[in-house]
Image 1 (cartoon, rainbow, N blue to C red):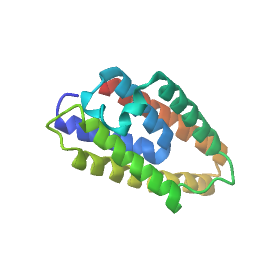
Image 2 (image 1 turned 45 degrees about the horizontal axis):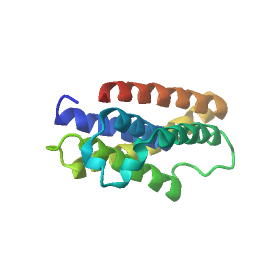
Image 3 (image 1 turned 90 degrees about the horizontal axis):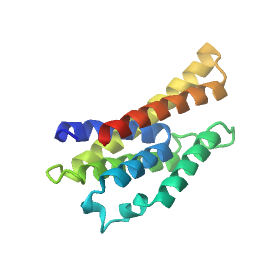
Image 4 (image 1 turned 135 degrees about the vertical axis):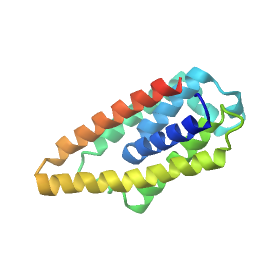
Length: 162
């Protein structure tokens, strides 16, 4: 990344992805860690995301989350457990991005990522709900459109990070 501001911008973008599809955001982090190999994560749990097996498992988890999102019995993303999960991943992702820049403090990056995840979770939830109710677009189609946006944003983040 070019500078500290880029780190915070990418932390926010990853937070947005985490708010939409948390496993997609974790998959982006795994891709990133496998390409840049920041030594700062060697003694942290994040080192587990560097393996090819973890990367494959995360891709499967991402696909599973995208499928599960379309099921009517899955809890709303704004209910406490899924919301907390998304915010925590946003924070972890923000902090992890700062690790390859020794001068970037992980705490502000974590706050940026977590806040972006929180805001995106609510914004996308309500946008999708309103589009379904007022525009009469089937939820399955809205979910597929959200998946496409997540994939596009994730691909762009991965390209910009490496």
